[in-house]
Image (cartoon, rainbow over the protein chains, first blue to last red):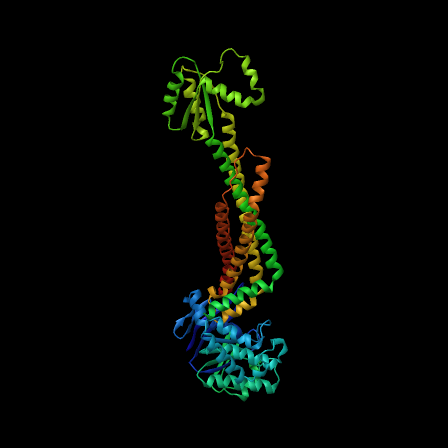
Length: 231
Length: 295
């Protein structure tokens, strides 16, 4: 699904201008890094796509649908097309790794046999099979991140949004996470990654959209992380 | 099927996760529904007692001893719609009744040379409210010398019955409001305890109904179970309570039909289920709507 953000302005009360006249088009299957200093509007942009936030002006079209026009049930079905990886993982602490994955499939009414099959498959793929009965707090940071990615992708979304997926991870684990994201992208999923990590942006070169003060200041194919992006 | 089993499991998890709160809510709902059923039974019994007294409400009209005065009065008054039945009591019959009432002291009647008792007409009414109408009608007849009836008693019974109905309605309304509030708050606490989970569920595409249903089921189960237990305690104790009341007040006609109490039990469970459902839905839907509302 193509993501089209047209002339979007977002103002939070009382007068915080988070986004200023943003125009971005992300074709299906693209891999995009959103870079920029804290408060530049990266997270707001991602939340526009999940429809947690609606623009003050302008519109967000995903797969040709104007998100503002969706009703409550429509939003639920729309969100099934989107996987979200949160910076703080947001795994459910009272559920095991296995249950964290089955939970999201049950929530959208998937058949039981398919749930088991998919869960086992993705746990194996993410290298978490032997850790499946552990609770999130018993997993390492990298394992928790892999579980969060597994949860975001298990329902085969068309779009994957990852907010700082390598934050607080060591270099080796960050690389492993990036390889997973790239492999998901290789299967046709649009991936949008908000990051401060210069190493991964430069190492795994993709489209880079740089934001500053709520404006797009750079949109470059196979771009690099520039020193201005984070200062 | 997966959705249904998930909802059942999740509702069970909600009950067990906060077992103390669930138990306290259950105890409160049992107390509330017990109070409600007691007030319903109070109204039903009052109406039953009043109806019983009304059915036996009799006006005695004493008539003069001239010829067929009793038959004339009986004929005229028997034509009124509010009159159930009419019986003529001859002086001889009246003496016989008096003798029976006096029992061992009936010998005193042998001192009488003649039967002094007048003939009378006993008029049974359909309801207490007609007493004054019939009394006025009787007093307007020249054959009637005097009338005796429990007019004041009938009026008081009507007033008491109306007061008990209003009082019980008040108790019912308050109990219902308390029960509803308790269920509402229990579900609300459950919702807030799981707000993060709910937010994640909504973000990954769970429909509002799917998120809300376990909470609604939780509230309905607790409320219906409370009503079931309250109904059971009322059903099991009703006979004993009525037996004790009958022993101390044998002149009152209490309701003894167990089928009515059984119907009340079923009604309570239905009511409990409905109240639980509505309150839980209100508690969770507001939160879900807020969580779904974009910023």
